[in-house]
Image 1 (spheres, rainbow, N blue to C red):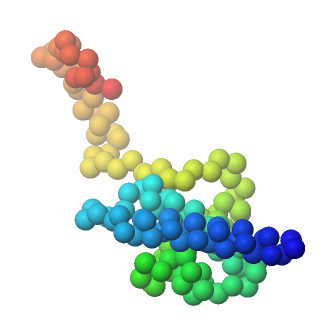
Image 2 (image 1 turned 180 degrees about the vertical axis):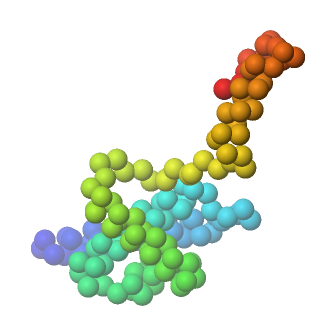
Length: 138
């Protein structure tokens, strides 16, 4: 009785994950997927790769059952990234789990150049305080 209950819950979980992935695949706009959608796909992949490894289920079966609306290569990429994140999560013993990873701060100018510009702006004789708070240099 316990095995039939587990398999029923497993089928419900797979159907739910499949419905989520179908919704994400169908709602893709011209600009690509949002970070939250990618994070959800990666989270689904993380749970599936771990369970599939433990029970000996092939990656193709997971792709067929849960990612039918994605191309095979796209689904493989999702599972690969999810597996890497899961391994990193296990190996580094991370205590803080974030779905969306922080982006690296990018700038065309080095931090030294930005500091020099800020210093010049603050010490320049011709600069003055702006009456608008949004113009304040941070």
